[in-house]
Length: 403
Image (cartoon, rainbow, N blue to C red):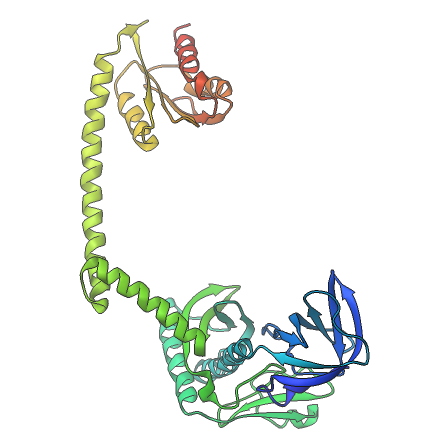
């Protein structure tokens, strides 16, 4: 079993240790030490990185027998019995202990205010998240999150001491633990003065002030729980910078102050909706006129009109609108297509007074285009990539109508 140096001091980043085993796993050397300050990951917190002598530590894991496995980059740099110098990447360690200590504070805030238990915790590359037994309407959850965030940051700004206790299970049972302890031999309890007691094996700050700030970014319902995403410390600063840059950029484009941007966006969206309604009305007028022109240019064939036309790079939604408009007239079969150098798309339709099954016609046309499509007897759409066959496909569809 490897002695866990971080167990008593999360700020320890430099240490020396003796190599007790080394081997190759998945093409990477793995080194086992008699003691280590590296955190091997667990409980939702990722592992540390750093170096052993000059070798980069890519990952750290804990074997079933308690040995800590240091996965290295490159060739095997050490031998059994050799004393090596280890160094933990402090920037990563600080980021992890800020998120983990922040989680303890935030989880206790939700428990203290609303009796909501933390059932899951994970630290990702950009954010951390907890799953809470918090059930309420959305507005109430939003209000609860604000209250919990305020209480959590009050504890952070109080700069309370964080103590680590290594005790027996019987001794741990005397503490007001926030969550159940499952260890049966030795228990490490993290205490946040006058606020929280929790069994935990991760790395933590020495005082709550080191967490810097706890900022909740978002929440959602997941697996019958409330999933809360948050950032702490340096991550909170980076998140603020990014959000502020985005807000300032949007405000600048709208020629307003940053705090005026939301109202400006609302106005802009309403103007956009109004313009959209006007544009749709104009498109409908244009489609109506275009349909009339196509009908007038199409002669009667066997007491019906076959409107057949190929457009270049025509908007497909407009093409469907045109087809729908054309078949409001009696005795009309519509065979329309739009093409680009890569694809051809088809819309076939017919008036309600005709027995023609345009889905059958479309299926045959799409086969010639090396594509597929589908629909109903009165309206169908599809396409394909064999664009050179488009004229022949429509001509054969038109011939099939008058057979």
